[in-house]
Amino acid sequence: MTSTAAYEQDVIAWANEQARLLRAGQFARLDIEHLAEEIEDVGKSEQRELASRMAVLLAHLLKWQFQPARRSRSWEAPIRVQRDGIAHRLRHTPSLKHSLDDPDWWCAAWNDALAKAIDETGLSDFPNQCPWPIADILCRDWKPD
Image 1 (cartoon, rainbow, N blue to C red):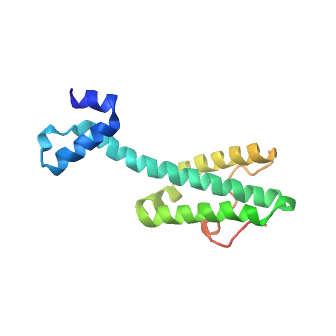
Image 2: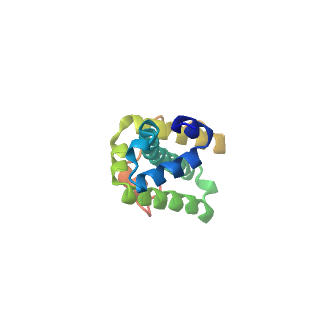
């Protein structure tokens, strides 16, 4: 079976074989093209997780601000969990910090947050753009008024 066929048939078995070949120094037998794709996908996966966590955090902050009568301690937990997850990702993958400066990334994260907040609250009068600075969003104790 060729490396491409193995990759397409069972990516886990393919990955294990590629790792074995790397460790054995059998570089000529490696499936370089698919290895490169998989390595790039690791970075994309990290970016997707950061964006997903940010969208969840922003949605909860929107709910906190726009539904003050429904605030409770149970609402604080998901905010804390997402902030901790984001901080962990940024500490262990510092290059992800560049995403926080990318207007397109923010637009996508904000749009995902809006969709979540609208779906969960039934409200629709949220701001079109994120009204809070990133420092506040990531601050452990900050919540919008």
